[in-house]
Image (cartoon, rainbow, N blue to C red; front, side, top):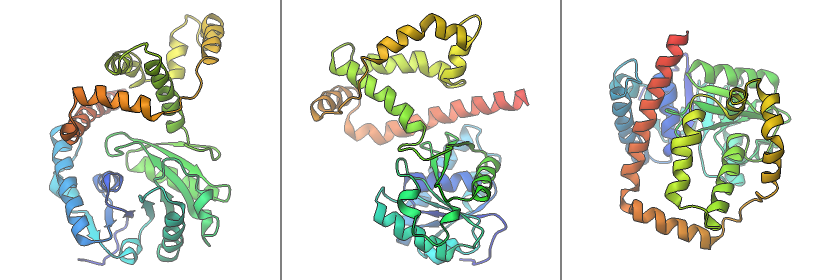
Length: 318
């Protein structure tokens, strides 16, 4: 394996689902990727799955070159030092364990170039909870992707209180340059933006199911054939801006009091085992457990088709 440093090189730490997707994001954009795994055997499995995903993406029109050309820029390694050497960005994708993250970020800080951005893909943990004692904590932040980031481009950039503005700007610039859609979370909050919004929807869906208002299939239809269609190309705030003749103030005047009253009945759901067991029973009748992986690939292919459509619209608007 070559040790030559590429002008644009990323260290992807962890070869699981998110690590593999991040590898595709950067390799697709022309970067060389050092994909770190604890063993070369694990890395080999990861590369096989990356190859399958790249073939699907090519078929959907989401690659500008051959899958083999993209894959050639993803270099597996079981050496953290080799992954970090020369990298402009390191993205950590390990389990949500504070002690592990503290250890890894201390190692990344010691091994990466001093001007590299050190990012975590954590879904919930603020960067301040695992970077406070890192000597180079000024270059540490969260870059929470939407799964899978190679198909869903949103990434939430959330700095710790001590993250430098230069690091934040550098991260935003990097993610934009590789085709992602970064949003800045201005200050730390548990769960960031996406999971808090998703959590509000999920909590209410579970409330409605628990209270017997609808089946799991019909609750999914509400999003699939209703809200999701609108929200796939415009957000909820633009939605309400367009749903009243004079915009958001008009919408609030018409419906704000009703939403406020409904909101008082929408307590956070307890996610009780009893409720989840009932949902599990309904879901397994529709989709047996041994078909989950196959259905997951179908999901990704549908996302590819949607993303290809979005890209055509964006290029046409440009």
